[in-house]
Amino acid sequence: MQHLIDFTEEWELSRRDLADQEQRLNDRLEPDLRFSGDPTGHKIPPMSLQPVLVNAIEHGLAPRPGGGRILVRVRFHRTADGTPRWWMLVRDNGVGSSRAGAGVGKDGGAGYQGETLGNIRLRLEHLLEGGGFWIRPHVAGGTVAIFTGGPPRAASADAAWQSLS
Image (cartoon, rainbow, N blue to C red; front, side, top):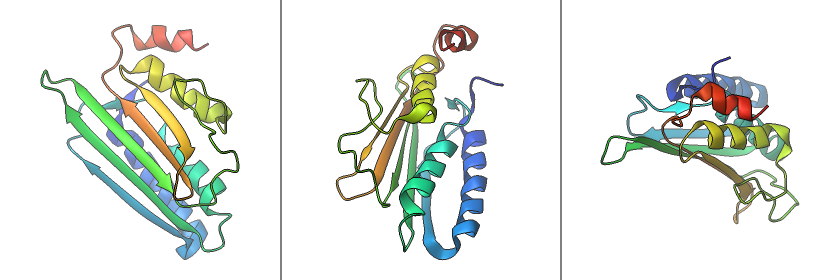
């Protein structure tokens, strides 16, 4: 398994899976996906976005009688010295979590982290400079997840990956 892939590969996998979810939920799912900037050269650990989308749909939108909206925004940019950076936001207007303050983040907060979401956070932090992942209830209802990423860490991806074992 590759430790990092081009962001466009992850984006395409997630878009295909979201299209399948749309069919499954008929007209109950309203996706709104947009990105800005050039994704060329930006890396992400595989299976980072797709599980977050599935969680938002399965735990947030599917239980809601009328379905709902899932919003994804990604921004790619380069710093003045050409360093690739990106951030991504995934928000749903689903039923949310009853655990106020629950989350995953560098602060080690407990919450609806689960193993999959915790692994996403660890992989982003260990494999990318400035990598991070946070998930929280949104003030208007539903849930919001924020991802950040930069260039691969100077240490080899294999060494970073081994540190997670």
